[in-house]
Length: 319
Ligand code: KG4
Ligand code: ZN
Image (cartoon, rainbow, N blue to C red):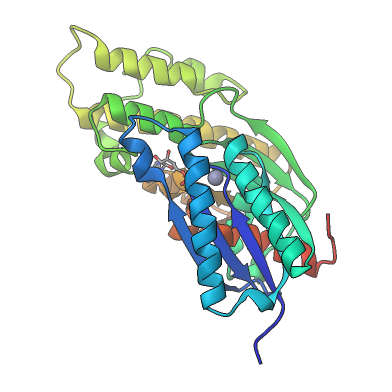
């Protein structure tokens, strides 16, 4: 007989449609992920309407996969991303979750997308979770720092007032003529000895500000790239200097907050935390317990939604 206590997670906040089943022990037992990412690039940018339409078709085909694998009757709870995200994309996920909940006669749970990113590093290692800790989400859409006291007591202490770090990476990558997304490309080009933090005029200001804002740095790097009589510096030099500034200044704030709240553990989530200089710089700080998601769980996915819902359910907190 099949195990009948799986939690379904549905993620549709941006351009990834993810469905996954997590059991009550926090193990992912089934997952599927489809992305409309490539379909947007032919339009030269992200098209929200297209994302919603693709979610509609992807949720149907994912449901078909679930049925083919004879897993529909193993679901005891349906969780879905309720916020934040693109309104149209979120709506498709919500309607799908509600319909399935009525059809299967199973309860619903709303999950915050950023909270799910925070816990994604504990997927398949639930036993490592010890509260409180600092949760840090750095992706293409978000850059936020949280104090995490429990699965449902999560307080945001700082968040970018403008661009997310991944977004800045991608915009600068485009101006440097690199492939999209720019983050992994800049990471690949990075060389510590080429990084010159004085290349852009506002480095000291960025380092000293006690809030998160990256649009100033973005503009000065782009202005530098577009300068008519710019000195003969290579793409690698610009990429390395930019990466060092953005990561050093961000981690500086993360560690200040860690000290301020007297915490010793950080859980990282989101695409940018895959960056090698980022991880290297964090690892240099002794005495800190750090958790990073597996690469496939850095990006948006249904498993992180199902995993957090499973954690909340098994602690008997249904919200
Ligand atoms: O978490 P994610 O897959 O999607 C969002 O929810 O936004 O993050 C995508 C972002 C992109 O901006 C991408 O450039 C960035 O993560 N990224 C990186 C690296 N890998 C992905 N940024 C810096 N270094 C990397 N190695
Ligand atoms: Zn995300």
